[in-house]
Length: 481
Image 1 (cartoon, one colour):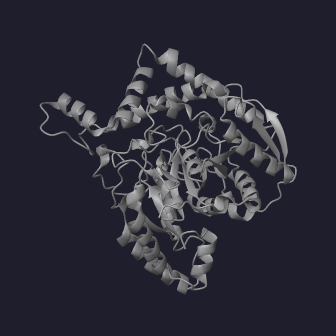
Image 2 (image 1 turned 135 degrees about the vertical axis):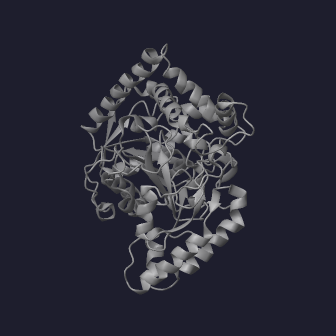
Image 3 (image 1 turned 60 degrees about the horizontal axis):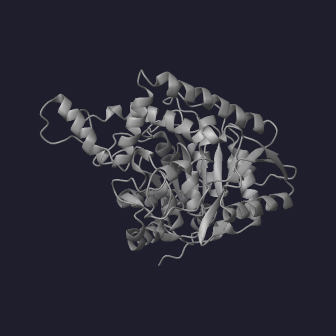
């Protein structure tokens, strides 16, 4: 059952081969038996999941089910969930219980999903390894000595290990796509403004966008149909109609124009990863697509631009965690200043504090014009690059990450920051993007990235699905028993 797609489990539920309660028992058993090796869950919500499963069986008995009724999922632990801990994997929010649901959570609940818990992540979504979590590192189900990626590493590990069929994720600079790549999964981020951010604990508001990690593009399409749409509670939400993504998956890609940025396949790329990507591109050619070499001339500056603007926004967003209103508070503060200083110093982890320092400096009077303003201007140039290329081609493709999943014992953050080089451009430009399984190197997964035009998630899902109909990389499962 854990190897089913959403569509396959839907069929089994509808034909009464299995009940939703039996589905719950199966996935609960998988989590309890194996997650101690992987550490993908922070909070397990079995009581809620059982109640949702029982309700799903009642709905199915009446013939009123939707595609997601009774489907087991998990939420990344930065989506607020009413009455359930929402920690952002931080000591700062270790015991915070949200009084409301995020819009994404609310929409998926209405679709009838069964939520088995809240999954691990890098603290406040800051990191690319899932090693910055206050609740411990997440291990890659393909090889425990390697990371699952971040920040949505818990989402990816839980799906890869077969604990759920899909998980919500978020993507600020690649945090959905990179862990999907590292765990041989399909991960998609929406166009900025396509999915509500209301109730999603922010890292960098002009970048953050919700996403999904699942086994296939088809599964992602089913999830997106329920998650996407205008939300009056989110001022950045766009009031644009949401297509039925699953109904557009099987459109022909004959004549598709694929842009291949020369910067993405430079001689500096690991030759083994380059070979996997080239093989995937040849498969697309065999399916009737045309490969077009393009250029994204500002690729070399996307990482410094991102790591100037995003920490600045994080510095502002995290200012509310001061030990006064909610969250961690230090013991026996001497005065108000001591309360502020010690609560933040003790409540935040090293990576979060590093980014707060970076962002505060970028926003300081002496650095604002030289760094923050300049980075915003270059951000516009990057967006122009992507939009110019996408006016000539249908999608952009290349590797999701320039390297294989990091070893757990690797040190230093510079390598992790640089690994975002292929993913952050889509966030700077606010474009939809996804990663799909494309092969393996030394037993570790490699992802192919697909970037599309704004609000054209349907196209990249269609392009990904076409590839998955012709290949079987997405069907490979890790063996960790």
